[in-house]
Figure 1 (cartoon, rainbow, N blue to C red):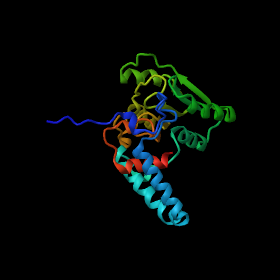
Figure 2 (tube, rainbow, N blue to C red; figure 1 turned 180 degrees about the vertical axis):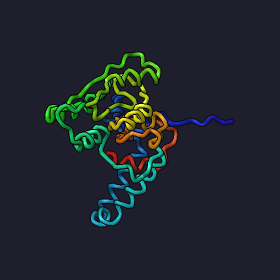
Figure 3 (cartoon, rainbow, N blue to C red; figure 1 turned 120 degrees about the vertical axis):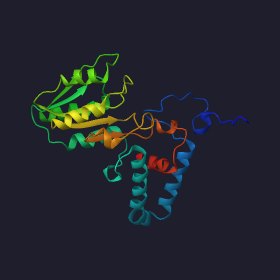
Figure 4 (cartoon, helix red, strand yellow; figure 1 turned 90 degrees about the horizontal axis):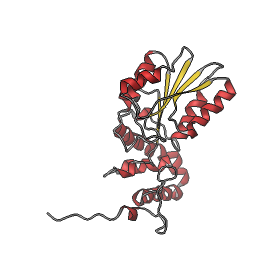
Length: 237
C-alpha cells in the first residue's frame, strides 16, 4: 500500500517561520482551516450586519451548540458560549450569593487566574477560599476523594476544582466528587479548561453544576474535527 504523506504540522498554522512557537495554551495560534472559517463568518457579518445579527445569528449559534452538545454529550440547551474558561468561572462565581464564613473548597493544584476571582469575592464578602492539599503523585481515585473531603465542613458552600490541572496535568475524579457534593447540597464549579480534546467528555454523567471549558487548547490536536466544531471555535474567540 502507498504511504500517505501529510504536511508538517507547522504548515497548518500562520506562524512566523523564524519563531519556534510552543505556547498554544495561553494564546494559541489558530490553524489555517479554522482561520478560514473565521474569515468566512466575518465576511458574512460584514456583508449584511443587521440581517446577520438579527435574523441569522441565533440559527448559527443553535447549530454550533448542537454540534458541541453531541461532541461532549450535553444537552445543547445547557451550553452557553463564553470567551474562555476563566471568563466562565468568573461569570458563575460572581453570580453566587456568598456570605461571611461561607467556604469555597479547592485543591492546591488550581489555576491562578481562576483563583483570583474567588480571592476577590472572599475579600468582598467575608467568605473563605480553602486549598485542600493533594500530594503528588496523585493517589487512587478513592483515596483522592477521601483526602479532598477532609476539607469539607458544615460551612462548605462551593467546591471548585480543575478536571485536568494546569500546573500538574493531573486528572481529578470529578464525577465522584460531583456526586458526593450533590448528595450533600454543595455546589460544584469545575474548571475544564484542558479537558476538551484531551479526554472523552460525558457532561451529563459528570454531574457538575457548572463546567467551563476551552476549545482553543487541545481540540485542534484531534485527527479529525467536524466542520461544525471548527465553526464553534469562532464563537469561543
